[in-house]
Length: 278
Length: 174
Image 1 (tube, rainbow over the protein chains, first blue to last red):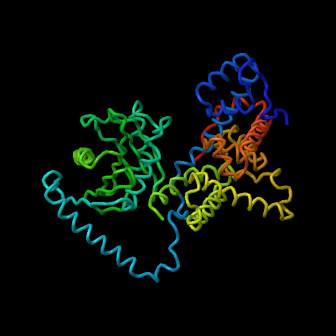
Image 2 (image 1 turned 180 degrees about the horizontal axis):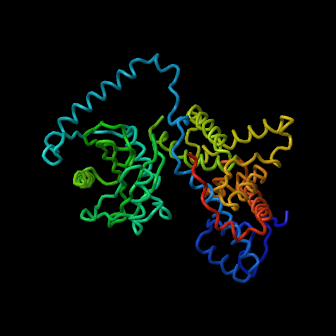
Image 3 (image 1 turned 120 degrees about the vertical axis):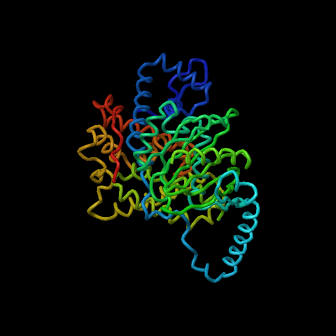
């Protein structure tokens, strides 16, 4: 091997610079202080600088080659949940218990929802008083996508709000129908941008919005079966609250760490903007 | 199994597919690898018990499965040349630039252990410690494989170094 990775290649009085430092520099894994030191070292050693630049170019080229895989829809054959256990049928009371729980929740929520939303939304809205882990289907995936991307400082979105028109054109093309982010500025949320994600049945759009205190809110838009329509539902997955509903051919889910009341405000705004576009 | 854990596994899938595509190039074989990995993950989840990062655990399962496959193939006489003779990259097609074909071919020519480290660090953006956990080797081993992989890739692509920057994205597979 030409370059033993851990051999010190310069000392200059300070902590010696190692090959490992140069790799970590190329991969942006150094803490800021060390990064500055290595930067200075590379200024004095152009040949090393060139080698490091080459490694970075490799990283970039590999990413460019492989990143498009991320936006492909997941093939059907990939199992997205555990296979049902063989012994499951031997435990009939489990499903019985689940059935009872659902009945209790839906009764409770129907009562809760009636007075609160009927007037505001002109459609029957129920609020499932969901506990952690009760999110299913696209609402569940929306919560996951929120958790995965909203804390990402470097790349929260694929296409930023500064290219909103390009974002709309791109998502519209990939989703096969017009997909446009709602305007939530009146509520204090600015558009950060959007990305395309693999969903259950095809591509899914995720829009990200940021509030004044740095809080993040995401809107997840997915194609659902035609004709289905559901009431507003509310659920939680860990720290994430999700408002979701199905309207015409689309499922919508708004995820945020904010409280229920704040999210209801947003959900209403999104819903009324979608209605206005029809 | 808690919904969050289930969600964390599902969230790994796009990254696992990307990693698999880098490992074996052919998209059908890559998804075979992902499918086997997921089946193992779902059935072994109860054994995991929060010993660490779920992503490293998932990539570790894929690594073990991939290495098993490589060993099994290298035992068969017709494939005895092992990784020195790469499979014909299926990814390349006429619409891909020459650069991407060269890059893919060079990547497939790397010894598997170097290819794995390169992909985990460069593409999956894992820290060296995370890559070490996924591969079940010490960090020093990750570093030396990375260094050798980078040198070798550099040699493979020599003369084309400036153009790999311009590599076009992988063509979507319909």
